Image (tube, rainbow, N blue to C red):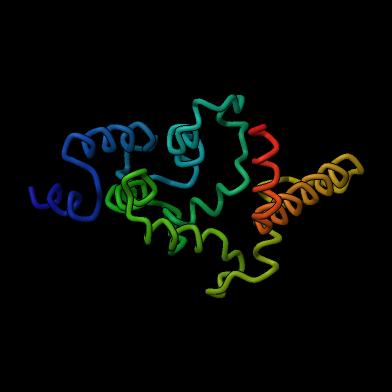
Length: 173
């Protein structure tokens, strides 16, 4: 089958794995059109992201901070749906065996919020806000400041090998 051979060429999946991916795709395609809508995708986000290990609550109520950006990878032209071929291509790239350069390209695209082809300070701020959901409460700001100081101390420690050597000698005695 030429289509199967094409899928094997654009992905890291074996024929058996492609069959499993197709079964998942069919289950997700609630309207049986051979395409996934954004609604289909979001309704099955837990299966797509394999987050079953993390207690997230009911999947339909879970809002992942980057799900709209993840959808962008599946629907880069904003057609409102993804075909099986493109689904295979993206899930393969995001899999553990997927090529590192493609993963980097996708991560870059997800972080370029304004779509200008560059990751600006505003893009980084938006990303950090989404993934940390850091609100401006006293507790959160205090926790942030404590974490920042700890990270700075670790950086200073990593850049001072003599201090590490002294500590190491003390522990050996």
